[in-house]
Image (cartoon, rainbow, N blue to C red; front, side):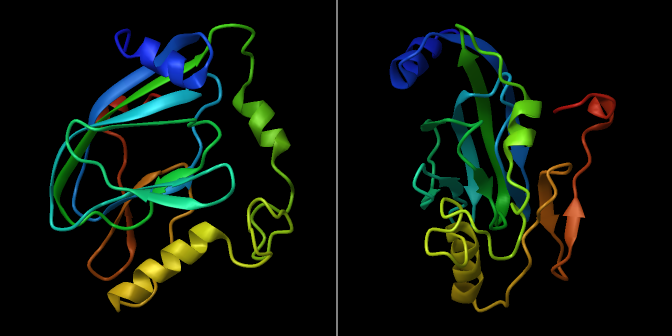
Length: 198
């Protein structure tokens, strides 16, 4: 974490403090990750360092840029993606197809005068955020379906398997598709069940 901090500071253009690092987090066959932003207290400038995988097909990280465009990023072992994790929505909406996918997650926050909390983020969310046809042009660039929903719908159309509703609940961000198309939630490991985060 300390060795990578100067690289993140150069990229972000600000002095950073260490927030949190965890992993290797290993996803299994069928895993998905709901669309979310991270904790604004500690997860502001972040990276995903990909360790390794055994996949039957690519399993992209979907990340929304500042203009609302969705980028599907496929990582190879040893590659790292840097992003503003408390600001840029990111997910893995399409189910992982393979045996395992492991990465390390490293998070920093600005060292000077940083006092943003999750409460600041929550009260800034407009009341129509979850409406089917949002009014905010930044969330739906053409005034209709969001770019992320379009990406997800096109994924399932391209597979010819029929559309599957995407997971929305951040309380259980890592989920899997069962054989019948339903969702199976992955609870935290028993030794972490009493803690707020994994």
